[in-house]
Image (tube, rainbow, N blue to C red):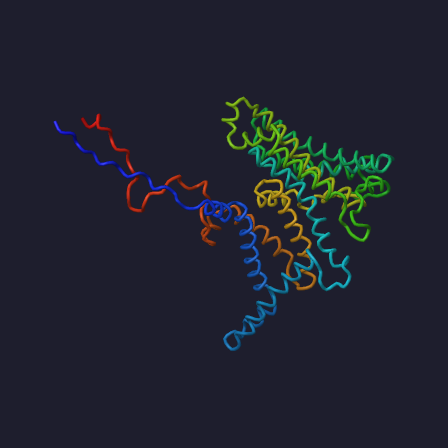
Length: 426
């Protein structure tokens, strides 16, 4: 009996591209590039809105057929003027002859960014554990009330008084966030619903305290405002009294380093990330998922509370009202999304949004651009970040290496099949 010759299927074609090709694909198609291009695309959309709302552009559009060059010049002038004003109001004002006056815009950017970074770190840490903390407003209000009360109620030496006020605010925010984690762990309550409700509880509680003499209301007034913080509990100015930037920025840098270490180098951070990736698998591996929820919300609330402390002791030192959060609790969600929930990404995103806030006022003052356009740009950034495939299609970005198969087969041909052995043929 003659042996049957069986054709051997061709081996899969190996990926013979050089290593640098995979590295460049990862860089160009990775999440960091997606975030950068989302900002670029949002700025382009903002430029369109600036052109559409400019009065000179609207006037020249009426005779576009006769003199199209006037419309093009007006559009370019409106867009360039607005973004130059944004740069001058947020980075460096090159119209100033004094260097210190020229760098004042960057210090204003960092001042606006300080509470955004702190709150963004709290929201981002919760994201990494699979929790959606949108209770930033409530946590900031409670933290500001606790820090303010310590700040005006005690006569203590300057360093000790300031440290105690900061700790009181952080603990207040941590307790308010820990309530969410406890309810999530013990009853299974959804953190989104709980944080929304606690926002209103904190708001009306603080409003009641600000209207009640002897509690948080300033003596001798009927207005819902607190007393001024004593000078010993105020965050000192970082570069002197002529700049608004205070030592809270250094505290936020330290907080960023701490969160980066916590998430990437500590055993607790490993448990956080494991629960965020797959709580069922983490539970099987022996991790107490319920405890991780409580710990995560405690730390998240404390970080968001740090933003309230920055507002109370660094920005609004003359007394606070129920609007001290200034929308930072919700802006922090955008900052965390833009930073991909990574500590240094959140830091950079907070600085960017601080630049938008500082430069937006300059755009409105010098160019008449509505400040609402800056808000629209921020919203578009979130929209584009939430749709990475859209960014990849628009900019023709490659898919990261981690999403590609290990081997390639030629188009139109089926995947190779292993040939049977001679024994099986016989």
